[in-house]
Structure formats: C-alpha cells, structure tokens
Image 1 (cartoon, one colour):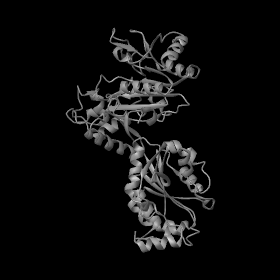
Image 2: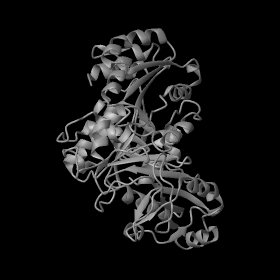
Image 3: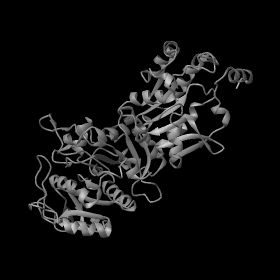
Image 4: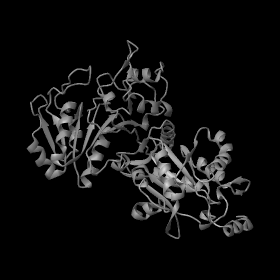
Length: 491
C-alpha cells in the first residue's frame, strides 16, 4: 500500500502532511514526494525545524528562502523548479533565523551540517498560494530526533503549521525492548515523564509505544518542574488535522506482530494507525492499516416470498438474525449494527442474548423506510456509523453457512489496502457480504432500490478485491422451498 493511499490524500485537493516523532520521518517525507510526482502531481517538501544537508540531496530541486523577508519565497523560481522536476525542497540558508516553536529559542544552523526550514507562517503562506502553483501536496518534517527510534516532544517542538491537514506521528519498532534511556531514546527524561516511568532501565513495551505515538499530540506533555500541562507548539491548533500514527520498521515477523498488537489497541480507542516499512525496498511502504470498523447485518425486510419473517427462522438452535449478528461480532469488527424494519420488536428480542456477550459492541438501528428496499437499510446503517469508523462490512441475515472466518478475510483484505472487497464465485463478484472503505460512505448514501451496495461494486469493479468463495457458503433462503431444502440437506 502506498503512503498517499493509506493517508487518503485526495488527488483533487491540497494536502499538508506534517510528520513528527522519530524512526523514519525523513524517509516517509521523501516517499510521499516520490509518490506524488509519480502520480503527475506537484509537491513541496520542507521542515519547520532543520534538515541535514545530506538528506536534502534526495530532493531533485532545492530553493533557498529568506524567512525574515517581506515575501520570503521567490515564487517565479519555485514555479520553474516545479515545472521541471515536480518536487522542490524549500529551506533556509545556514545561520538564518528560523523561528523556534512556542516558548523555544530561535534556531540557527551549525555550519554546513544542517539547514533550517521554514517558520510555520511561511508554510501557511505557501499553502495559500499552492493552487496558483498547481501544488497538491506539502510534506513537512516538524521536529528532530537525532536518528533515535523513539522520542517525546519538548515545549518548543514539534512545530506544526496551522494549515496541516494530516498529522503523522512516527515511531520505529526497533525501539521496542530497549531501555528508556540514552542513547536509545531521544529526550529520555521526557519520555519517562510522559509514561510515568521513573526507572531508566525500564524497557519500552508495545503499550508504551502506542501511548508515545498518540498522547502528546494536541494534548501537551507534563512539564518537569511545574507539573502542569505544557501545550505543544501549535499542536492544539492542529486538531482539524487527521491524526494518523505510523508504526515504522515493521520489516520482520516479530516487529509486525508487535505492531499489530499496538495498532489493535489504538483501534479500540477509535484511533487509526498505519504499520509501515518505509525505507525498506523489498516491502511496500505501508504493510497494513488499522482502525475502528463496523459490521452491518441487514435484517429489515418483511420476507414476502418466504411468507414469514425469515430473520426469526431457527437454524441449529438459534434465529437467523442471532446467528448473523453473532458471526459479525466474531469477525473482529469493532462493533456490529443490526438494521431492523419489519417485525422490529421480535428481532430485537431475538438479539437480547447477544447484548451481554457483545460487551456493548452490538447496536440495533431501525429503518423506518424498510418498505422502500435494501437501499434504505444501507442509508440507515451508514448514518449510524460511528464518526471514527474506517470501514464497514455488510452481510445479509439469511446466508446460513456464512463463516466468521470469511468475514475476517475481508477485514484483512481491507487492512492490506483494498478499499472495496467482496466475495466471488467462479470469478463472478457477489454483492454480499461486501466491505467498503470510508471513502465510499458518501456514495453508499446515494444507492437506490434493492441493489444495495452491489451496484457500487459493479461500478468500481476494477477496484474490488475478490475473495473466491465456495458457492454453498453464500446460499441464502428466500422462499419456503429454499428453507425446506436447507433443512432436508442439513447443510
């Protein structure tokens, strides 16, 4: 999965991505730039702190600015460099004042080794002119880490421009198991203060790393002397931005397993995260994405052809709606929604035994327009999705042999980068069960009739990841004859 895809950077709008933390920020910065240029877009990279001169050589073009000038950027020169290369890095000359973070000193560069970046207000000015220059991405490195795998912020950094649309804290998984002390950790005393760990020999655990990636940004860190919350430079103003932590250096099986544990814990807190191997040529930049997910059971119909509510037909000792909700809960989704319509009271009663086992993960949503077809239930479900939901999986109430393991495969396909995933029989895509990334939620609200999301799948067939499935797993029951055959066969 490419970084721009995992971050959901819209090709038609300007994105300002600020990377903070440690463990691969610069690699991610230039990877994003390469992806943008490869897609025919223009990109500017910079830093609000400093960058090593050797690292800046990865940019095909560079532009020096004078931050204290009335108009610090030579716009004509920038336009020329972007027209020729598609990517330009903007920085300040050595020794030029570059405006430290809130409460921090103005930084000056050591001769030769480092170059200063841009004050955040200059980045804001660049963002305001981006449309005129055809720039679709500004990628920013917002702090330094002295090449350590993990760090904690200081009062004067990170420096996050107000225009930031995506805030990406980065941490290296190679820091796991190492002591919370130098030379393994940047600012170890602040790391220990944030984690409330006094012993420098304490080793970094997955849970600790998850906290370091999320807790400081926008909420401040505890000051050593006063014990009060010290807000990060500009971070509290960046919460219009999408927070997307990156667990980097997942380049081995043990590190990938640890990253999954962290990402799963964050997903339980409604915080999405990426697992990456940026800078490892043999692996894709983003190996997996994680976040809150919802499974949706469509159980609103009146079962006209069946002649009785099929949601309540008992199969192997439980009503069909109970079975469907149970396997949805077992699929690994963060929560499950059952959409009711006809016989809503009876369906809710049938679901009662699952509420305790679901531990608050089961909700019932009523579709008052159930007579208008399946689309109404899809609309009701999408409207009820939690704001943090990253993807939704829809399944019918009447597929008797549908296994939870198949639903788990659909979720894994999404985590691997597929925005649409569905089952297929002999190469032909079926409409249910099917999974939709959040970028399709708006289009799901527009579906009409009984087709539900099936028409959307057909319209975007080239994007659908199809999982070949035994046809008997997808057998449903619509008529008394279907039900008799199912009962007689025993399935």
